Length: 215
Ligand code: 5RP
Image (cartoon, rainbow, N blue to C red; front, side, top):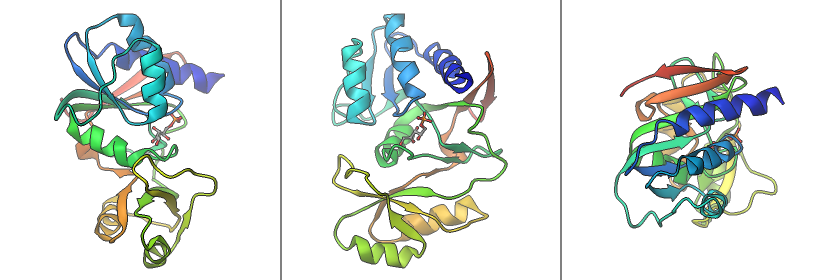
């Protein structure tokens, strides 16, 4: 219950950052589930893109207009959750397997705002790091990665990719991000660099702790 309350206050604070006329990227997950009704209640005239079919469906039912992300090339703001947040602002995302689309949306946004409960900040990121693999040769890609396994029970991504997790230990997220990005067959990975992040809103009890990385 405490965690749910923290997700809600962080999401409601983020909904207030959206202004009339903006183009908005909507993330995926249980924290974003609180953002969607909060945003809908504001009754703004906005255009949205969604990082998953689940988010698109919920948003539309709430009356938020969702467009295909072929129609827009820049977003004013994107708001999404995270699985882990380190002191520098590195994130691990993809607990819901949506990280490839989430990163495309985050990097298209002028401001990317992360919303989370107080269990998400951590002193050091730790495995697993979600990855999405091209289906062709994915067993070979897993072998090249070393410690990596297909996520049991995970459906294919909407782009046909296999959702897997890199489970090896790591100290330096930048080094691992470079290695994952450079591995053929890896479509996307869940390490998001601080350069993508504008602000982090963390619910702590009934309060929201804000960290601004850039404007
Ligand atoms: C989905 C994500 C989510 O943002 C992340 O898993 C956090 O989810 P939740 O808000 O449910 O804790 O990256 O791919």
